Length: 267
Picture 1 (cartoon, rainbow, N blue to C red):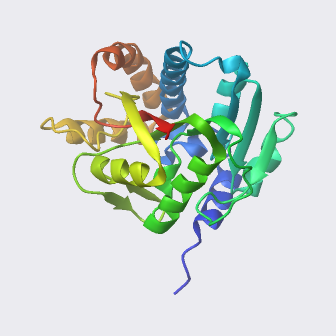
Picture 2: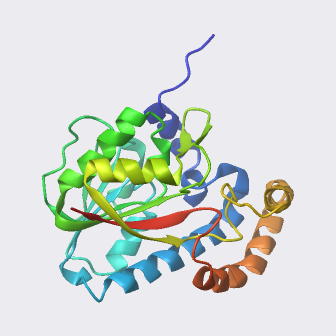
């Protein structure tokens, strides 16, 4: 029986074979539906940045993007005009492909779950970890990652962290994804030295409803995704239909059934 690949090996191969937003998104959703999901993520990101602008001058901010992957959030931060930008990923494939696009951006090849990744202490005003930390399924390495991010932030610095923050118990899929409960995440953040200030929903309708308590929600989503998996055209059509409604609901709903962004401050 062959040994399962390590997380690093898994992502190396996945990005080699599936370079693009669908490669760092959900492969099952195809390219077209993933493209709509990333439009929602861009909208959510810009809202978060707007909310920070009253207390923080982004043009003076030193930013670290963890798990920079195919560079989606590096591009978002660059558009915000931040003072300096650093990306970190443990996939050499990702970093090799990013370097020509991001000249002047420091790109670090490291595993955040290690005891001491090469991050200068207290050197960043903002760290973003979007759709990353739930891929660290080992709880010890997850705790290491939070401590490393805390050490890399300047006093009072902000961690922008997206996860599912589920209210039930943790859920694990194979060896590459683990949704922890909100209570477990809050405890881990507190132990690492963070204060969780607020959470904002990213998806209400378009993301997997792993934390929905509405009867039939998960089943309806699964049926829709079966259509998406059969046809890129169906993925585009569904995304186009849901996108405007998603933007409206994101402004109304205080707590979502899927991915949310937490804003945390270093104590």
